[in-house]
Amino acid sequence: MNFPVQTSIETDVRYDASVAGAMNRVLEAERAAQSAIADFELQMHASLEHARQRRRTILERAHERIMALHARSVRSLEQRTAQILTEQAHAPNPVAAREADGAHLQAAIERLVERLMRLTEEER
Image (tube, rainbow, N blue to C red; front, top):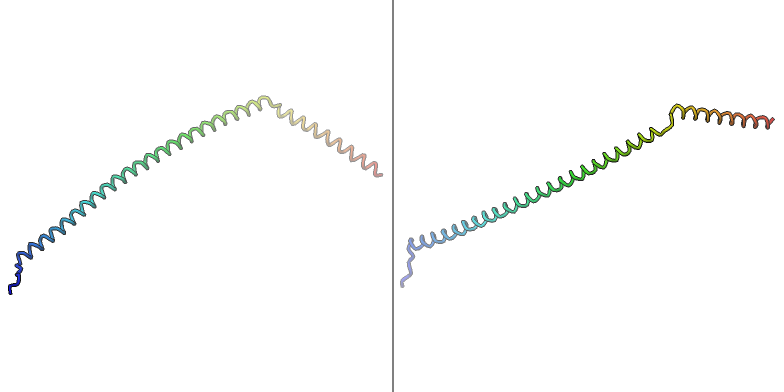
């Protein structure tokens, strides 16, 4: 009986081919991973730029709104100031108003004294 005899050269060649195939698969997987990483980096940079643009747009709109509110406030303040100045110009003299109030108060006190005096006389 003859048994097939494997030589070490045949075994070495098959082993080397198997190792080479495994290394090729590893290298191909590494290239695929690097390609996927590069794609994700591109997507990340695009997303980052989009977010930056949105931030700029939001800031610009907020600035425009702030400036509009500021302008309206200034106009409102100017109108109210003008109104107060006009009212003050047409207001009576404060000294004369106090004197009139004092005379009015004096008259009210005199009426109250007279009324109290009448009540006291009626009780007697």
